[in-house]
Length: 73
Image (cartoon, rainbow, N blue to C red; front, top):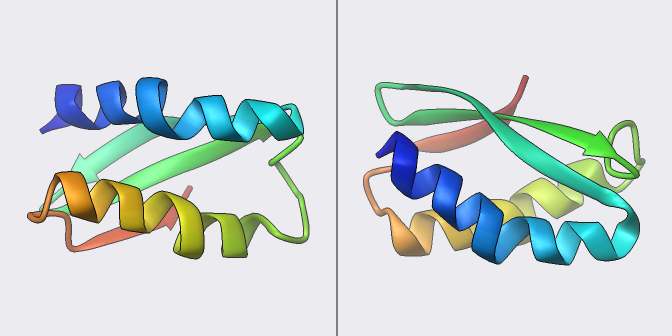
């Protein structure tokens, strides 16, 4: 699952975040809970929670239904 998530981040998520001079990286996967870190323009952005819940989470859950939750670390 870790490699799948990294590939999705690289191919599907980060290209969109790079449009805002940011990105995300995988920190951990534990019992279906994925921990990500936002960096660049996304780090500390007031809209980061919206980006996470309306952008990143749906992409990951669509491609890997076993994901229970996605949190920022």
